[in-house]
Amino acid sequence: MSRGYGQEQVEQEAQKRSAKQIIDIEIKGNLVRFFLGENGKQWGDDWDDAPYEHNCGTVYDEYVTGTYDMAFPWDCRLEEQADAVINSQYCRKDFMDRKVAALTITDKFDKIHNFYFGDDMNAILKIGRLCGGMCMGGNTYEK
Figure 1: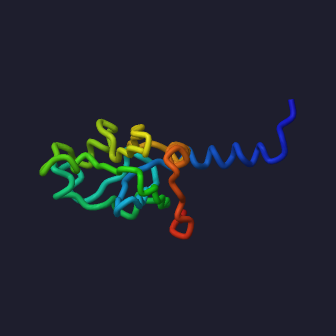
Figure 2: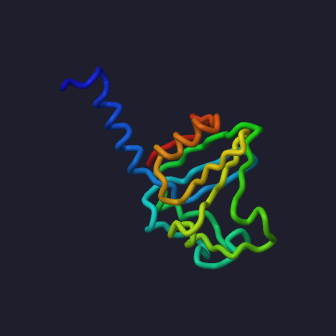
């Protein structure tokens, strides 16, 4: 069975994207920077201390193989674990171990989408499409 024109390139690109996993996030309003690399090996300052929102820094640069910035529509609500409490019970290692979602997005139809550390680029793009998110292309890079 023959593949359609470009199918092999599409499959290769999807495979490359699946190798890039979320290893940290940073949120400013409805803009999210996904730090990409290999989940489970990354570390940052005080990543084993709770509450993460008061103690830890972003992932150390040596673990980052790229970033992907995505803007979500005004109608979407972006929430971290720390948003509903003064001091969360979580540390960044909990995210790394996939015990809890690092980011929850509720779209304009009240459908909930979760991002976990270890999710790959395909998951980022899928949820982004479902929520109407836009890549901020100029800020995407690979090492």
